[in-house]
Amino acid sequence: MSRRIAIASDHAAFALKAELIDWLRESGHDVLDLGTNGPESVDYPDYGFALGKAIEDGRAEFGVALCGSGIGISIAVNRVAGARCALVSEPLSASLARQHNDANVIALGARLIGVEMARACITEFLTTKFLGERHQRRVDKLSKGA
Image (cartoon, rainbow, N blue to C red; front, side, top):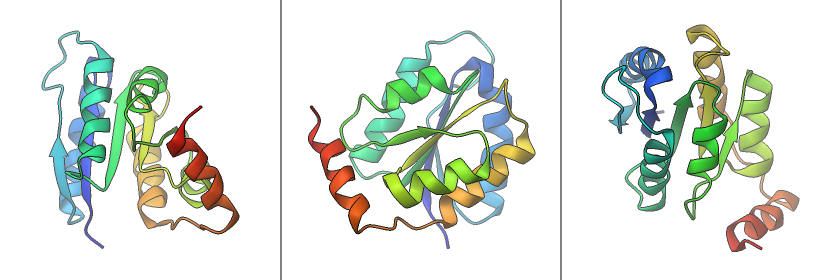
């Protein structure tokens, strides 16, 4: 199934982002590349915020956020209302992020995982459905905030 996917990275994950964009497009997905566009040092919050806003305004159904560890950019994405970003490192956490948390963005650490593991995480993320039911009230609380 073809999806609209936004992807963003900082400089530490630029090379991984390029490989994933090619793979996602070859897989039939519509990919919105939000940068960065080179290996020069940039600030990951700028790219995390841009990705969160693409989810919030409906330009993308799902997102992939990349930085060196995945931590910083995931924090930035989660500052945007409507974005639910989960930092994952293997397919099980990607699946649980969708099943239980209705995550619409995953974050990956380019310095921590390789391209094959990134692909496996993204595949699991995109093919797993939200379970709803008891999980829905929890997701609703996340949407309301504190």
